[in-house]
Length: 371
Length: 220
Image (cartoon, rainbow over all chains, first blue to last red; front, side, top):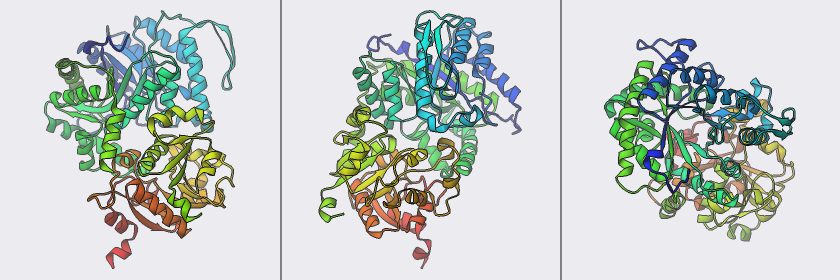
């Protein structure tokens, strides 16, 4: 799709889940199998309320049940009609691209063409020791596996050799994919080299903005566009993933999300040496940072703003941070689909929207006026 | 290093990631002649530097070392041992790296270093004059927090090092980048600046940062 011909109807609104262990309404932790079935229900609701995609992450941790996204997505596929089914993100560095191809080409078949992928290096590295990879190969692994995956998706049969897996000779994989399937995005967390790589492969870019003001990603958007040009690719789509929670009112959203957000960051502070969470920091994330939290109007206004700011054509909400109960997640999905997304489209239609950011200049101006 | 070299405001940066390019941008704005390198040949980061740090020059790491006596090391922590031990001989080397087990993998030497991770960096580069600094603020705080000297609410950055002349040079750099500079003391005081340390990851003004780093002095 040409970027210039894009309308607000073409913007894709997704939901992203880590399939986190949640609590019931009395505060007791649910078991992993229940959490997985609840997540299927959440995706079924997302389909019913018109959300464009449902995407599952990949971790190997005790508090996240997202270690086999393709299985959960296949279950969702059997119960839904329209919603696209993807990952956010697949840690490609420690996966076999041949397996990823067979799993997701099969998902694409059972879902009648609804599979999609975001691939990345992963911000956590627990999969490296688990699958026997050396962290020293962090860069090379991703490069090689992205190379093989894009070739499998684009042009079979494939003859290929690399450092980390056995070579392929004139290899066809089944099931075959129709032309243009499976949309594959590259997820980046802020590394300029990753942005360049996405452009080099001619793949759309997904920004993971998990804290702080979104404007800090504007220079990377500019870098991506310049790099696409340099590699001779046409303009490609840019998406963003951020956390958030929608409730009836701003206050209700804070009351529900704050204790769970604090719990996550208390753990991170203990494990990773981060600063401990405070209500001030939480409020700052809501007001000027990367939490899309509040009433439908508040959240829609902020999403429309960031779509304009960065020239986005996809926005994924990582809905509900931490152990928020299933029932409250269902309520947030309903509001996101029925109220937030239509309102964002309305806000963007109010004045001409061109998804082209010159945000690097906005940052430069903010910087130079202050020094 | 000579006074004239400091006055010429030449800065080298090894690492063209988030932190390296952010510091490069601040340094260009502060009047520095900046040379920056990534892993591999200069062409590999030319576009990154052109877009993210216009005015800085993308060069090889060897050229960075030749360019300046004041060098920032801003590469992923798990890669610093790939650089030759004598690479920074005689140079002031600002260690802007942080050790994150979840990103760098478990590294026993770094995880248990009693004098902090910068002491390990100093051991690796024995002929360099290592100063720990520019690591305890998020890169966007460095981007957004730059202010001219005397501006109310100016954020502070601390520097820790055993070579006091080197620390003085880094304090001057911090000021020129747009931040109040606080002397944190010897290199092992860098423990307070690293993840899990007393002042890591939060923006403070110089009075508050000093009182956190020097609690006895401020209560006396």
